[in-house]
Length: 152
Image (cartoon, rainbow, N blue to C red):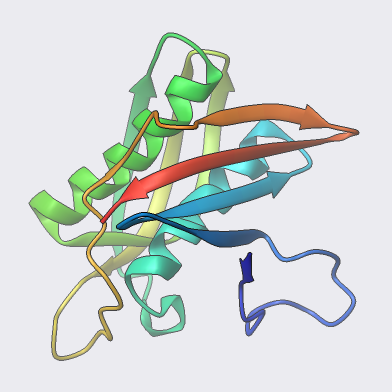
């Protein structure tokens, strides 16, 4: 597994907030968090970091999102795909996510971020969608962990 470079992490802050793994023509994302809200926030951070260098994102633009799905794992896929929808339709990527409400089938969040511009942002790759292939979301000790494959 390839770990996040940790550029934004504080020394001694524990494990990286997300990792990636290679998957045939796709990329996988492993995310951990103390709470489901933290897990979803870190999933957003991981997705954004795969697309651009998040350090180059400002927080001038704002979006409010509300997503529903049948279960927590499907909710994670819907959440990531909603973020990709915002990128595709409004060129918006979040720099910061604040989950305002969450239960097993819905999440709402306030996002602050930037409008992506090719000349100003270093685009790393194009992510088309979060998939259900090999999707996992579970408790690991006191933490939550998710594994999702992203279609490139």
